Image 1: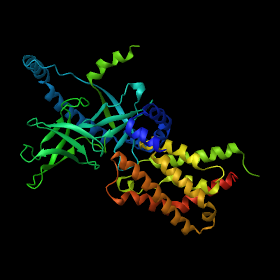
Image 2: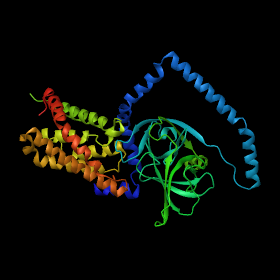
Image 3: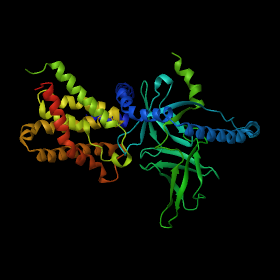
Length: 263
Length: 162
C-alpha cells in the first residue's frame, strides 16, 4: 500500500494504470452528472418566447459589437507579422481548440479538479492547457479513454508563469486552495505592480501558450519588514461556473505528434 | 432460505455503486466540506453484516476505485478504507449489540480516522487542508449512520442475505 502511494506520488510510474482506472470509473461520473444535464436541457428546451427574443436581441447586439472590433484585426495582424519579421522573432501561431464539456468536479474541496467529457480518443494529452471565454483555467493532468481530469490554476499544488500585461514584469502565480485567489510569489517591494493590473501567461516553461489572460491583481501589500510584497490576484476565468470549456492544442505538440507515430 | 453467492455479490456491488455515485454528485459549496463518506459507511455496514464475505481485500479494491473516482493519489482511500475495514472486523461482534447512538459514536471515530489518514497522504502531496474542517464528514457520517443502517438492513433482509 505504501509502495502504491509512493509509486504514484514520487515516480509517476502508474500513468497507464491510472488511465485504465479513469476509463473504468467514467460511467459513474457520467451518471452523477445527469441531474446537471437535465437542468441544462430544461434551460435550453423549455423557455418562454419572451426570453428567447430577449436573448436573440442581446446576442445580435453582442455580435455587432464583436464584428466591429474585429474589423481592424486583419490589418493589425499583418502589421504585427511585419514588425515581428523586422525584429527577427518567430511568427505568432494561432492555436486550435477543442470544445469540451465539464461532467464532474472533485468531491474533495481541497482538490480543485474538473472532469471533462473528452479523452485520448479526441487527442487530449497530459499537460494540455484549458481555457474558457475569459481566460486560462488550468491544465490536463490525467487522460482516460473518454474523460480527462484537469487541475485548476487555484489548486494548492499548481503554479503558472505569468507576466504583467502593462510592463512585462515576470512572476509565478501559485494556487491558494481558494477558487478566487492566486498568490503571486517573490515580488520584491520595488517591483512595478499595481492593483488592477492584468496578468497574462508568459509562455515560459513551455507548457502554457503566451498571452492568455490569467488573473487580475486585487491586492498589493508592501511591508518593509518582509523581503517580498504580498500580491493576490483573482482569476479572470469563471472557474466555478463555466460548463463549456476549450482545450487548446499548442503548435509545439502538433509538430511533435508525427514523430511520435514513427516506429 | 438464504440467497446464493451471485445475489450477494450483485447486491453488495450495487450498494457500492450507489455509494460511489453519492460520493461524486455535485453539492452546493457550503455543503462540500460536510459531504458524508458514503463509500466508507457502506463498507462499514457490510463489514458488520457479512464479516465473512466483505473485508480487507474488498476494502483495498474499493479504495483504488474510489481513488480513481476522486482523482486522489492512488492508495489514499485504499489505505484508509483498509484500516477502516480492519477496525470494523476487530470489533464487529461488540458493535452489533451496541445501541444505535453508541454505534454512531464508533462511526464518528472510525470515519474520523479515515479522514485523518486521507489528510496525512494529501499532506505528502502538498494538498492538505488548512483547517480542521476536513473532520466535518466524520460528524455528518455519524449522524447519517442510522439512515444507512436502516436502508442497507432492509435491502439485506429483502434479498435474504446472511
